[in-house]
Length: 377
Image 1 (cartoon, rainbow, N blue to C red):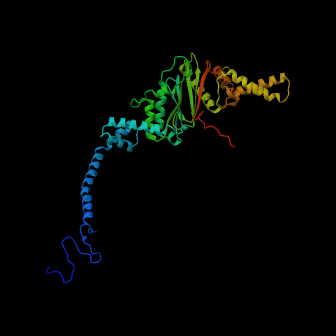
Image 2: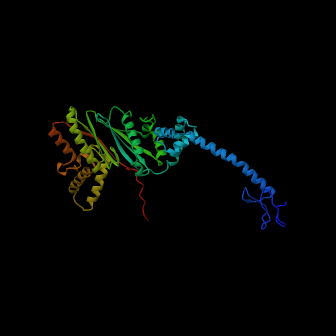
Image 3: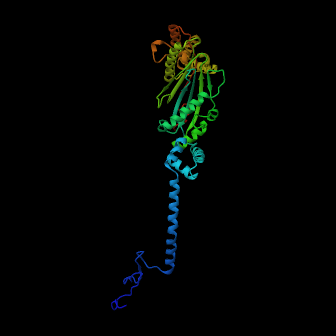
């Protein structure tokens, strides 16, 4: 054209000629001009951009359809983490019931994956009937004590303990061991879930393997069941617990208050002294004979006469009973009071109330679940 200087490179409306590279530059893309094949590839890519943007907008619109209030309702219903509640609602199109079912199925899968992991922490807990004639004791395990101190875990423990308290037990018997399978099938007062379903939900919420290890119910016919929990994380839940049954037939309500105080002191003693049996009659005969054989073997080394050995056996056997039998143990809270049996009889005479200790349990966290010791070479 007339405006172009002589010898100047040609221009067109799409861009300028680059004198150094000898290729055309596209002002709109700020990229070197491409060959035909590459241009076609770029055109196809640019053609897909609007579709991608539409997909993003649709996803955002779908996420926005799950409101914060819906997430809150699902979280209150299930106790699941916020992110899990959001995923469930999105997966089920905002249907709360369907999202709840989705979370339960997800929780079962999660629980199955974590089932093989060790769970030696947790709590032992107690639930007592208002009438004071029945107490349930249980152990619920977690992987860490951090979870054991969590409110969600403690509420779960309390709900299962209350279910154990209401579980059907035989009419006879002071202490009833509850099969774990029976307790897992019990309905809780939370959304009608079974104990097993509540534990699965707890695994999802807390991220740890949870295990119901054992449970029992103690019952008094004409008396009270007293209890004590040591190293508590929350009222009624800690690392060691004991419950003891005291029968006081004919005692008034006021007298039962004092019996309850005596029972709590005995429960504290049980936690501290770890008795194995209630009275000498409960010690298995084979256990007594085995202890006698050990004592005789120790005494035989001294080459004493048979009569002397018999006295040594009786003396050391008495020490064995003092270590393992509740009523023969020295009362640890007041050593001057004598043994527990004497404490009870003295208390009964002082208050004019007939009292008999008929049974007890002691639960310690992880008891019987310690890892096996290995011998060093």
